Length: 467
Length: 92
Image (cartoon, rainbow over all chains, first blue to last red; front, side, top):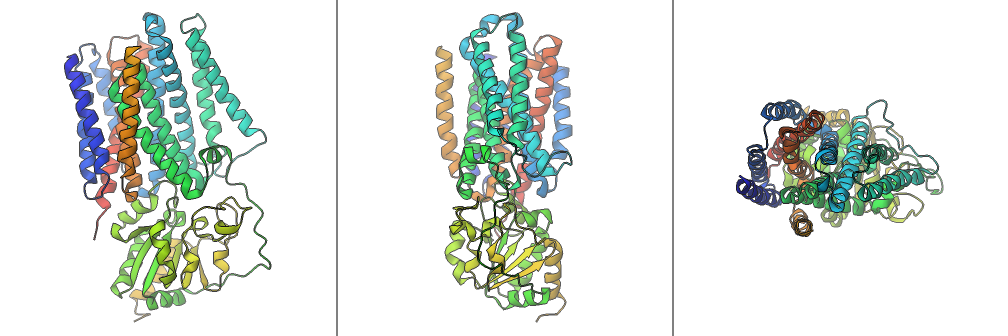
């Protein structure tokens, strides 16, 4: 029986690595899901048939419940994918925290010899990471879902970092105490205190974080969830768990690094340097005025262009405008206009968010171009259509040292011959900075909900308004 | 101590493999990548199965069952939504 378990673990590990390998290309990616499912099934069955498992009904019921909740969660609209992802990090953290808690109290009661210093340390790490990921991710999911009683805007107060680090430091200190005295009469209380502090820390960690930082934060929480699984692997002495957790953790790490680079910020800056605080606007001489364009005029500009670059942002996701984008894409390509999409790494609320939305609208992925590839082409672009993106096209990032977006790589929309910017309101973007792109001589504004504006634009092409 | 070092060894190697493989993932697919790795790390389900199914005290098994439910939710929704998203990526 033990041999079956070991072989199954090796097979599952190999399948998981192949699953990620196949994600390298959209053509092979679905094979990766199949490999992952197979690996998971093998591992679950091999564990289930072990002789010490006797309460089959319990396992069965929990699995059924998992399907009952998991299936609807997999059918959410794609605009809600960031929330779903945050929620799944929360579930991953919760599972690690609970298994850690169960193992600790099991061993403290019956097999205290199991609580070696090493294993107890791993338990402490598992429980801290697991529970902080749980509440932190729940907060992030709540913010993304715009749950009413969770503040959307970053909440900051004096001494915040001191409080946060204090809570985490206290949990870590209690962890050291627990490693030194794993089985004392009061150790159970210490353990519960650690878990409680971790739960509190997760909430405190996410309170000061705002929407534009979500891609980074989700990636960091992804890494934590993976590391919690690794710690669980150390506790249970399971190489399969350690490997799968390490794959998840390294994925979260790489995505976090990419997101941080795309915002020109460091990890610590994202976590401890609340972004949303409005900075004084750049004093750029006299305040310039926007020039508003009519839908007809915008349609004409697009129609006469040879190449159009569409720059989508969170505004497109909020308005669920991706299908209208597709209609515009069709109308323009039919007229021989080359249409490309410029995707900034942090556009939207999670890594890859824009790509998935546009793919949902059946836009071929060959038309989706990364920032670094599109920027050299921008001076040749006739019309840049900015669609609910703001900070990622703000030229102030190049020179305005006083703004939080300084140094952030941007899509060079301002270098296009003409810019049309679709914007929901006249408020400044997330970072609270005026966007001078909107007042450039060659920029025309279209105010309104992205979906409605695009719908009107498409009508111009369809109804014979333009031939 | 021996166990500890061999598991640590596996962790270090797996991290290097992870970094190497993930680095090659297409940027188009970062959202499905995250849901896939999330489903994979729900392999923590094997831990919950042992805690839930073995002959342990009731409270322990309840903790295990909740953990098992949480992991299973991640497995099901993670793999299903990944596949749903990947189906949408078409070249032309």
